[in-house]
Amino acid sequence: MAVQTTIYHDLLKELENTAVTLVAVTKTKPIEDIQELYALGHRDFGENYVQEIQEKYPVLPNDIRWHFIGHVQSNKVKYIAPYVFMIHGVDSFKLLQEINKQAVRNNRVIHCLLQIHIAEEETKFGLNEEELFELLYNFNNGDLKNVMICGLMAMASFTDDFSIVRREFKSVKVMFDKAKEMYFKRIDDFSSISMGMSNDYKIAIEEGSTIIRIGSKLFGSRN
Ligand SMILES: *Cc1c(COP(=O)(O)O)cnc(C)c1O
Image (cartoon, helix red, strand yellow):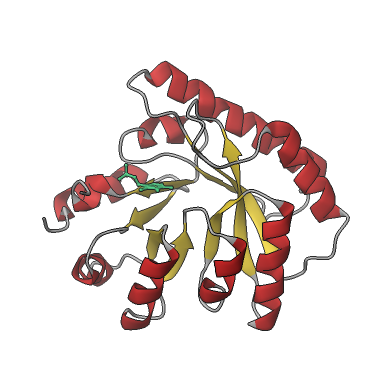
């Protein structure tokens, strides 16, 4: 299935007077889909498998901002560190240290979001509130100059009950505000909340999201 350009333009209209960034999630989708959206002016693309982003990155324009939205294993950070714009799924201090190390090697700063576990499913990665503040404490007392913590990321439960989804998103905003107050009060870069996918992005925006990650709505369902 081709890119849903009408839906894309409708989405842009919806976001027009907001500060919300649309990340187009292209996992499992062909290069041509990315090129098509790129030709329309889109620059923020999201992938969540290292092997796949490694194959796509070299053959696409280098002004694309690549968002790594999945869980990245420490030993794979080195592959994406030369070019990744933002890593959304950081959920341990150890991983943050590794990202910093690889960022230093590449003489660049990598934007990171800390992933919060809010969903009911146990399989999803992420920090609980206590772990989040422990990580922030360690970061604050450390010396990781080549990572920039820009905010939080979360995935809601896979459910039709949108009251649960809304409650989960609300809890992320509460944690974000608390983290901002405690550690990033005067740091403008701590300003992002990445939450909301094809089925729940409207709720996410209502609850304070600044980055939505949309895949199937733009590119059709994945196999
Ligand atoms: C696949 C994926 C998305 C996009 O999901 P859609 O429901 O297709 O919009 C967003 N975020 C993450 C982390 C994903 O893995």
